[in-house]
Length: 300
Image 1: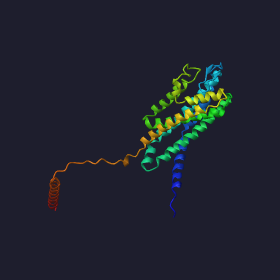
Image 2: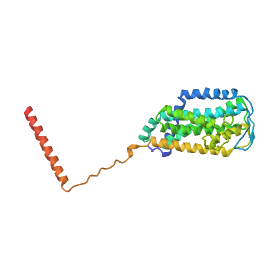
Image 3: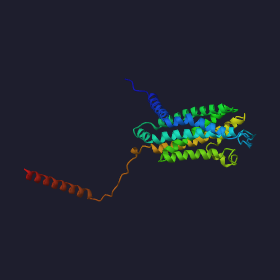
Image 4: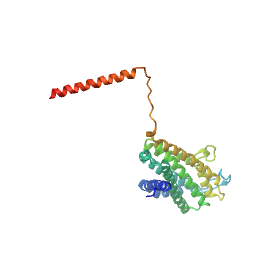
């Protein structure tokens, strides 16, 4: 019988981990309901509840002065908010619930590299599906000038918050803490960048927010024909930083503490101490044997 090739073994580990990661997301019924209902409801409310009065602002990404309708601008912010919240919640729930199981797998010898790659693949597929869904809903309300750029911006924002969800799920101890961290991060991040409600949307502080690149690219995709690969790269940098943070948190949580060498306790030795100790042990052993023998004779 020929031994199994190493690449087949690694492929089996990776395929199994990816299948279980995707199955875990599909079984999250609450997340599926949010994807099916929350995104269309939230984008529809953002589009129909805000007046279509034109808003004049200068987009930092292009330097052009834009005058889009207020409801269209708010709909882009709502789509970004919905995508980041849902994907961040899904990845946090998966990491928080399966944290102990991942640790047991790592302690049992399952390669952590395959577990991380499986989470990355599941995050990529989920973000792509949700971003395409949100882009299609946006095109149903109004026609952006660059739908592909809008989908790319939503995708990068989603995987960024998904990586943050993995980090929160690995570091935080309570589920309420992680949910609050994701919600507040997304709300504050996007509220400060909406020029309809915030006067600091073109300020210097917003460029340090997690979805700054995605917001600039999505706004440019909606109301400009200028391609913005620079801001997609900025958002990709945020994803890289978030992914490294999540990877470090996952590594700390699933590290194998059984392989650590135990510290050796060295006691000072005194000449003749070993001889006296061995003599005392021998005398104690003889005494115990005599007592046991006497008890046995007494029972007889």
